[in-house]
Length: 294
Ligand SMILES: *[C@@H]1O[C@H](CO)[C@@H](O)[C@H](O)[C@H]1NC(C)=O
Ligand SMILES: *[C@@H]1O[C@H](CO)[C@@H](O)[C@H](O)[C@H]1NC(C)=O
Ligand SMILES: *[C@@H]1O[C@H](CO)[C@@H](O)[C@H](O)[C@H]1NC(C)=O
Ligand SMILES: *[C@@H]1O[C@H](CO)[C@@H](O)[C@H](O)[C@H]1NC(C)=O
Image (cartoon, rainbow, N blue to C red):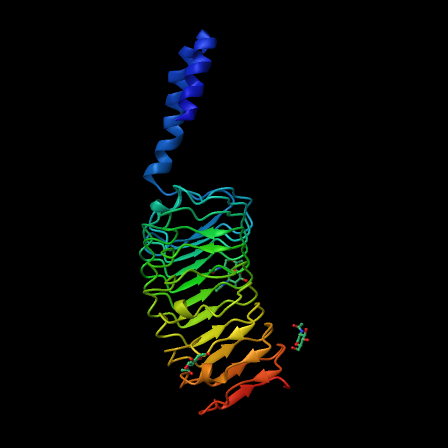
């Protein structure tokens, strides 16, 4: 709409232009129409495959937006290493999308409901962007997503329902963000999540009230955070957990009964902490402890 306003203003100040406008519109229509009827591959992209299995590679192409003129049947779009800042109004065109790589762009916000029509999406890579918070409906519609890579962003806040549509998610990577704490129930409904990586954030506590929802979790990496103390109810109910790392935190004291309910645990890494006191010996010690010298 702002464009229209500009045209009207220009016309009023320069009456001779008014005759040129219909001609311009006709030219525009001639340019736009063919693009709408058939798919178009931007010059900096490479479009492969036929109608049924089309793929678009627009890697390192200096793009500032997600191209909207690609084949609407496209299942794979690779936009890594570009200058994309926003996702607004671009993704509804691709309802068949299964794999989307948006890593290494400059996206500051994922906005709200921008993935609403991507119910077929399985892999979403948003690594190495500038995302600082996840809003209420950030991932709405992604009910079949299996893998979400949000590593190397600046995420500080996560709305309690931001992740709630991700009912099929298996792997969530939050490495290298700025998360200090999570509100309760952020992981509610994520019954299929198996791998959660929180490496290098600023967590002060184990987000126990969130982990509680992850009935299928197998691997939890909380290394390089600021956890001081692991409470005895920290990992309650995580019966499938095989690997847990709390390496590189600032723990000085440990209540080992915290690990008691972890009946499947095979790997526990507590190295690089400041452990001087362990308050409770485990009754069923896991087969492989990586214990620091205490
Ligand atoms: C996107 O392209 C880059 C560069 O070719 C590649 O390394 C990356 O694996 C691709 N992403 C996906 C999801 O295939
Ligand atoms: C996502 O993209 C980054 C950077 O392009 C890459 O290093 C990473 O391996 C990708 N993640 C997945 C899960 O493929
Ligand atoms: C956990 O610790 C609290 C106090 O630190 C204690 O009251 C409670 O009984 C403990 N629970 C378990 C299951 O060890
Ligand atoms: C490690 O623990 C000792 C003893 O509790 C304490 O004096 C020291 O300041 C701690 N160091 C760090 C880096 O927290």
